[in-house]
Each structure stands twice: as structure tokens, then as C-alpha cells.
Length: 559
Image (cartoon, rainbow, N blue to C red; front, side):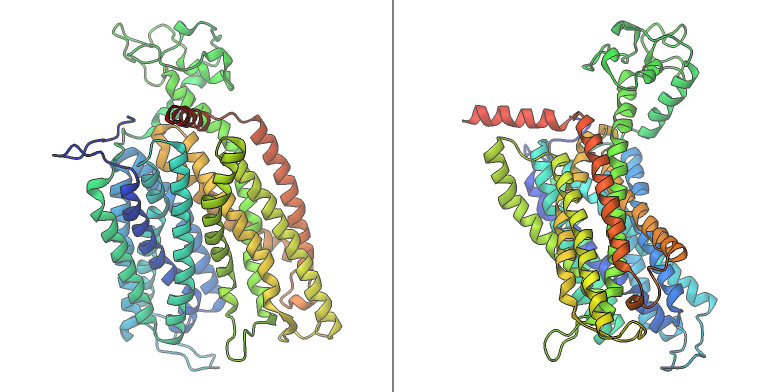
């Protein structure tokens, strides 16, 4: 069963299944609350408590966000190759806890912070080298711990189920937990840090991390563990090397001319009917490649057809993966610009409350959480009744593409209206003025982003998990994190490019043309959706279709 344990020690009970759901999502909730508690308000903490300049604080925050979305790949490789998802998640949660505790110490002990700066003073004491060292150590530990747990837990949870439909439902609820916890930490804990104390806010983050770790460890006796079988990337590299070394060897149409391992021919379709046929050279047997007993004599010259299939599957899915980068990049740009727009708009909500501009993005998390519930409870069952099958990951991703483009279109229209009001009130040359337009006008575009994420984000995770080779299951879910990391840095670079080349993004948005930026993103979204349709129409499922057929047969048998 893919190297997985199925029986609990000293019992006849089966491991895995929905009994593990509470423990894994509980761990995810605690760890997500902990991360949001320090990351969401990091820029403010650096400026107010460490006297860091605003631009430098933003750069540090950018680095942290980028690293958190790239570290999951490292955690996934370690999990798939050496110690498994459970141990990676447990160790990383401990590392995260150490980082947050150290960060809390910087907020508690005056000796770990520079002297506070008087309001309006330009002569602020910068942090010492020791204070910087402790701060960066705390951030590094918290960053590594968060990055290596987020998607490792997602894979570990999906490993508890055999059917793709159950895995898809798990991903829906896992990311519902993730978005809900992020929304809570970005509002409640941030409010405590801003209005009560940083010590209490970071303390709550540490407690949430500890509770998440406890949930993870308490469920260990119920988990079904996937045993790692060494680095899967070695086999993929061997395929590339062997293909290059045999580039002049002519391919054969005979199945028996290819190497399937010591156990003989596996259930793999004939090589002649496959894409990327040139890779078959890596499994083509030539003189001296295989010993008399069927074992490999030259490991860097001959590979099994299964290893060739694994690399072939990765190459087939890469075009779809690339569409995810261009799907997430506009979201990153919109997130940055929405905060700047909110700063220029009327943020009053009633006579005594003013919406913080940084909290406006919580609307995306809220709408995503609501939409995930509606999709799982209503839309998916309705779709299954109408069509006889559950919506495929590619269909969900496609809906996400459409909604994402509509959000950019809505953003362009709202910004055009904001500029017209600003010009009508002669606010074009008054950068600090507030445009008499409610910040709630931003709700529709952020709602569309959130609803779109509820479709494409779990859809991408489910697709990669189900279609990646078995040896790369943890790496598969980390691929979505890589998309976010690349898109995050790419959106930053594109904003900088627009500022250099055009006059659309001046410091005074009332004198700019942010609406043109959104119109450009609409064009990018339409082109990327066309590219996605080409990739999706030519793609053939390796595992999703098979799982759906199996589920249909089971349903027929039950009826």
C-alpha cells in the first residue's frame, strides 16, 4: 500500500481515515494562529519597537513572507526522502515555538530592544548588533518552523485517505481551517498587540503554537505513516543522465527491450504510446546495463520504466503549474494596491470605529472560508447529482481563473470611480487627503479574490497531490507554496517596473492611474486563462480519473 503502515500496534484497528482529521486540523489551526500573530504585524513591531526605518521593515517582512512560501519545498524533500511528514511537521513545530518564544523575549526584556524613540524625533537609537542577532534568530526560527509545517501537514492529512474524493474533501476543510485561523490571528491577535501589549500578543502566539504541537503529537497513534524510500530526486536525475548518455541509441517498439525492474514487467502502458518518448532511452536495455539476475549493473545508464514515468508525469504537469504562477501574481499586486487604496478612502465604520487599512485583506480570508463551506456542502453535491461525478481539480482551477480575472475587472472599475471622485473634489494635488468614498467599495473585488481562491487553491493542491509520483507526495503539495513564493516576488518586481516605466503609481495615488494597472492585469488574466485552457484540454489524468472510476464502481455496487 505504497509503503504505508495500515495496522495499529497491538490492536486490530486500522490507521488513517477521518479519525485523524481533528488532530491534523487542530494542529494546523494552532500553528496558523501562531504564525499570523507575529507575521501579520511584523512591520509595525520593527518600526515601533526596534526603530527600524519603514522601508527596511517592509523589506524584512517581504523576505519573511517569501521564505515562508519557499521553505515548504525543503521540508517536503526531507519528508519524502528521509524521515516522513510526521517527523518533519513535529520538529518544525518545535522550531517555530522556539522562535516565537525568543521573539516574545525581545518584547519582554528591555535589554533586547533599543531605547524607545520619542514621537517626531529623528534621532532614534538603532538596535545593537546583539539585539539584531537575537531578533533575526527569532525570525529565522519562526520562519523555518512555519514554512516546513504548513503543506507538510496538508500532505500528511491527505495520506490518511485512499479515495481522491475523500482527499479533496480533506483539502477543502484543511484550507478552511487555514483561512479561518489566519483571519482570527490577523484581527484578534493584531488588535491585542496594537492596543494592549506586544508581550501578550506574542505570548498568545506561543500558546497557540504549543496547542497545535500537542494536537499533532496526540494523534500519532491514529496516523497512517508513509515510509520514505530515500531521495526520489536521485531516480529522476538518473533518468536525465541515462537519456543523455543514450541519446544516439535508437528506440525500440518492443516492450521486452525495456527495463521494468527485477520483478519483471509492471502495469505500465507500452512505451511507444507515451509523450516525451525520448525519455524511454533511459530504460532501454543495452549491453552491460543489467546483470544476469535482473539487477542494475550501471545505475547511471539504465533506469526502470517506473522512474521514466515519474519524470514524464512531472514534465506533463509543469505547464499547468506555470499557469498558477501567473494566476497568483495579480493577486499579490492587488493585495498591495488595495491597502494603499484603503489609506486614501473613508474607513469610518459607524461613529466610533475606523477600519485599519492593513486589516482590509482579512475580507479575502473570510470570503474564502465561507466559500469553501458552500462549495463542500452545496455546490459539489449539486454538481455530482447533475453530472454523476464530482468536479475535477482542473474544473475547479478553471473557475478560479475566471473569478480572478473578474476581480481585476471590478478593481479597475472601482478605482476609476475613486479617481473621478478625487478629481471632482480637487484632491489630485493633496496626497494626504481622504477621498469621500467608503472603503467598503473594495469589498466586491476582495470577495471575488476570496471566492476564486476557494476554487483554485484547493484544486491545485488536490491536482498535484493526486498526479505527482507516489515518492513525491509531500513535494507535490509544497508546489503550491512555491507558486505563492515566486508570485510574491514577481508581483513586487512588476510593481517596481511599472513605477519606473510609467507614471501610473506615484506616491500620491490621487494623481496616478492605478486603474490602468488593473486593466493590464485583466489582459494578463485573459491571456493566462487561454493558456490554461490549452494546457487543461491537452492534459490527461493519471490518477484522478482512475480514482473517480473506482468511486463510481463502489457507488454502483452499494446501490
